[in-house]
Image (cartoon, rainbow, N blue to C red):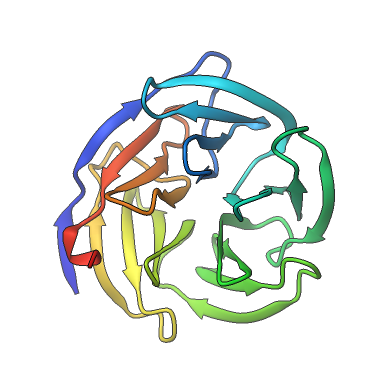
Length: 214
């Protein structure tokens, strides 16, 4: 396993009225982040929030190219980002212990925090299709270029971990500074990861290592 220090490119926030940041996702131009009672759209070019959706949002967030998905307690909500309307819900596999959400390969990928698991879930029914074990608490999940990464937050230390999607073996880890916790993870598809900053109320951009790109 390769261990390197995470390179923080930029910090966004804290934002007015935001005490903590949970899930994060990227829709191609805006970073959406969950802050308990709403989803917020951040313009990463200006660092300003440009709109928000009033919806329960206390853990992972994902975007499938058309809809937002948001964990709220023991359910995953499917949301129309244009209207903010909740179009449907499915049960979250951790029954409220979920943290981390991503979209890839037609499935949702859900972190189960204290159980240190990542589940592949049918987005229509909530059926768990398979489960990957981790050796750390899971606080964020993202796929980029066929690679599965997840965030950890355990023992006052956070990492971004690239893992084998079959065995769960850690292939590479980016270590965050001790006071920079990861409470959500998303890739922009290029050279950045976006990380929720937990109780700091911030969102951070972290450089994605070149070794992970073609």
